[in-house]
Image (cartoon, rainbow, N blue to C red; front, side, top):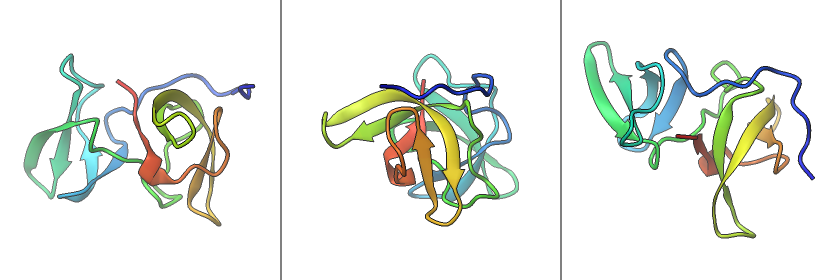
Length: 114
């Protein structure tokens, strides 16, 4: 059973932080995902690149955590694939997300939904 989120629904958006393996922490520089499933992100001070949602992950620090209502995809071990989910809250003590489909989800298993 899915939990109910009182926060307004939102997508990962401009100004949000994501983790990208080859670049570390990046800042989203586009209003949303493009049709090909990529986001424009800023790497360093001036470089802007397109990154696939498939490699993007949720931040681990509460300062950058995605807020409740953020639409994400979660890699479910029991199903063995990515499923739609919504952020309910962030747990600063464990650096995990409570999603409507999973409590204490590891940020490595959470990415933007496109």
